[in-house]
Image 1 (cartoon, helix red, strand yellow):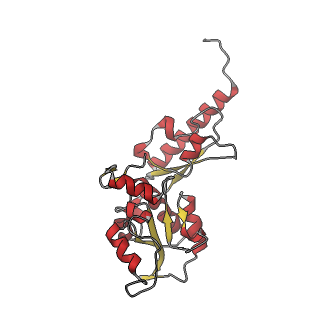
Image 2: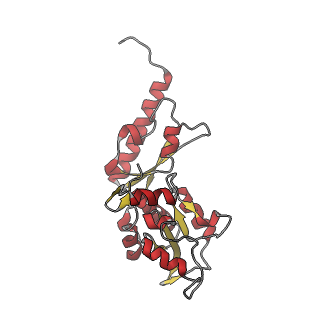
Amino acid sequence: MKNQKRPKEYFKDSSRLFDNNVLLSKGEKEGHGYYQFLTSGTNVCARCQKLHRKIFRYSEITEKEAIPPIHPNCRCEIVVLEGDINDIWDSVTITRIGTLHPAIQDSAIAFILAAQKQDINLRITDGFRSIEEQNILYEQGRTTPGAIVTNGRGGQSYHNFGLALDVVEMKDGVPLWEETDWDKVGALGKQFGFEWGGDWASFVDRPHFEMSFGFSTSQFLQMYNDDKTTDGFVNIQ
């Protein structure tokens, strides 16, 4: 075994793993708390596709699972994300991030910070919304005053499971509902794995971003009713 010649791919993969660990070490020393896993190319394996755009905290790094290359000839990359939740400009947004499902909190932080870096100060106007609150909101514009803002009853919105957030750009304490560059904001949100309501064919909802993890709201509601939860949130994995 000592004289066995190793394939070139072994040295290439080992070198990339070393480089990525150096990159992460540098980011940690500079005070950054997160990095993002990104796939590369068109022929991506299912294992890597599942990790695409996922945000990892430095404190949660599991080398074999989260730092590419994670298999021979893996072409995936990592991007160090600057800042952490305490760098967010808005205390209201920080508080509302805390109401979200733990599975999307880091992505929400990265999204808000990326917008902030481009001089777009986003406020999360709505995060977790209880089923009771959802039913009240559903009646708005139907049986109670106001405009219709949702087509989902209680249990039919990802907000009810902490897996959705609504945002708006703020300037001088005023929400810019009409002036916000929603296409730019939408692109930023999608960059961190969110589905954007601005892409929907019907009932376009530009302030809305969500993650489904491949489950429907009815499936999540069943999990919730079956008490498949941790700290009040449905178990996704």
